[in-house]
Length: 134
Image (cartoon, rainbow, N blue to C red; front, side):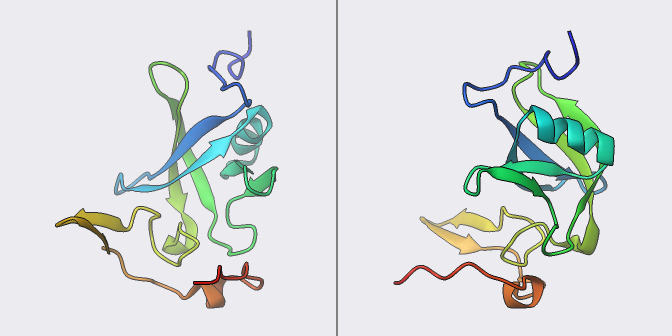
C-alpha cells in the first residue's frame, strides 16, 4: 500500500489540508487536497490544492505569486487531515490580502477584523471575481 493510500480519503476523494507557517506556527489557511494534488505537492515542493468551487487543481499563488513552499508534511492520528508546514512566500496567504485567512476574531458577540490588509486584492490579482450585490 502506498503512503497516499494509507490516508482516509472522504467520500468525495478529498481531505482538509491546513497550511501552517513553519516558523511562527500560525495557521494561515485551510484548503482541500485529493490524491493528485497531494502527490504534486510532494513532487514540486509547493502547495497544490483542489479548488472545490472551480473543480480543478489550484497551485497556491498561481495568480498572486504568494506561493507556499513545503517544509514539512504531517497527517493527524486518524489520517484524515493533512498539515502542511510552509514558508509563505510574500507573507500573504489570504485572497483578502491578509497574512492569514483567520483574521475574523469573535469579540463581544461579533466578528471583528483582527489582521490588517497588507496589500489590496486589486493590487494582487489581475482578474478579480465580481462582488456580490448588497
